[in-house]
Amino acid sequence: MIVAVSDVHLGHKDEGKQERFLEFLDRCDTGEIDHLVLLGDIFDFWRRSNGLIFFCGGRKKEDPQEQATVERLVNTNCKILAKLSGLQVKNLHYVVGNHDYYIHRLQKRNPATYPFPVSKTLRLEDDGKGYFFTHGYDMDVYATMESLMSIDQYETLSESLCFLTDKSGWLADRLWGVSEVIEDLKYRIRSMQKPPAERETEMDLITRFAQSRAAHLFLGMHPMDSLIYGHTHVPGCKKMDCGAYVANTGCWSGSDQGWYVRISEGTVEALNFKGENVV
Image 1 (cartoon, helix red, strand yellow):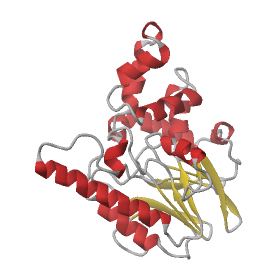
Image 2: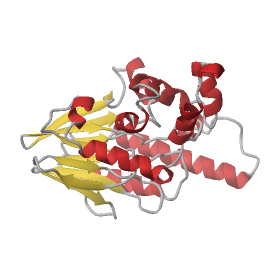
Image 3: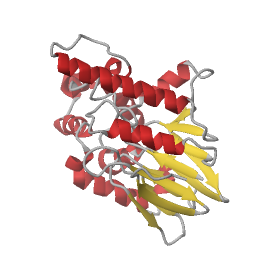
Image 4: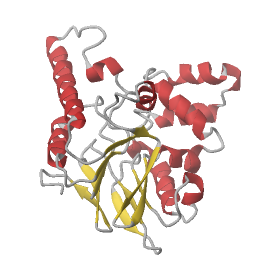
């Protein structure tokens, strides 16, 4: 059995998702799960200082109530990290997203001691069938920004935004020079930071790309593999004519939260977690 989850965005707004995600991990804490795939944007380094995600870094809040909230969120995030490190699943994988891309560099610096392998994409097999996992930012570039930047440039930008929250205009000037930044490119950078719900048309393009018969040529996947991705925050699962699945893990933000994908005995499902057993 394979379970995949993405787009929790820990560090960006609470909405009770931390406790709910911790409960989800409790339900995943079993050796019956062969692979648990954290499919990117589990943490959100774009919208919150890294220090405020894992420890109470930076200046102390003047409002005692606000400071208490920060400390509570950090404490729960640390519990989630500890839980991830001790899960009894047979294999734990981390596929980076654009909002937590810096984790890829952290794992490269400490490969021997990092608690889980980190990669940009992942291929697994279950019941003799292949499944390709990617967060989905790569399809975003191909579907909506290919004429403006390459995948490499997007990844460089994503890593930089992990440290430069709300400074996208300054970042664009720093990366490409003021005179060389066209207005459309600046728009795209600002668009990257918008919630997916505000990018509905672009999300539709990504969905069509994912379901196209040519997707494997861009993503490096086997043409008969099923594709599992996140990024758009739109959960769903579709069985294609060829028999492969295209599934989206949804998100844990907003009103429609708590989604994950489960793969078992050749069947792929997009499910909404409501406290039940995952297995």
